[in-house]
Length: 173
Image (cartoon, rainbow, N blue to C red; front, side, top):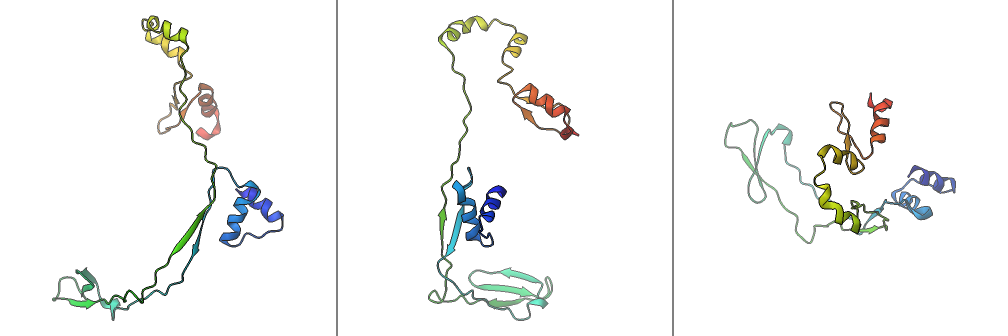
């Protein structure tokens, strides 16, 4: 994605805001497998806050049913003080509503490849059941996964050559 940003900037555009970043990602056909979501606020709202007096002196809080909080200055000393929290009326409450737009994504879904048996293979299949297990392991190496033999390494490879390159590379150490 950095390349698309650089190309977009070299064309004389800025990438400072979220909207500009969206247009940078979607420029020149977009980036495959990347989907951009942009959110726009429809309505501004004022958040209402209510202060609890002397809250810095309070140590234990118990939330009761409704809009009540029972507070203590010290744990387990006294009966505590019940503070009532007032909810704003529904006409005064402003909610933040968001709208969003999604860019189209060109996702590729991978499915496991299954090998089709030809008619001659299905006819000779019962004869192969008598073959020793050692012989079968050499025939089906292309379908097996090869794991790294080192302790603590959990990598798997589809080809023996890839495992060999990994073991001889400096990434292993």
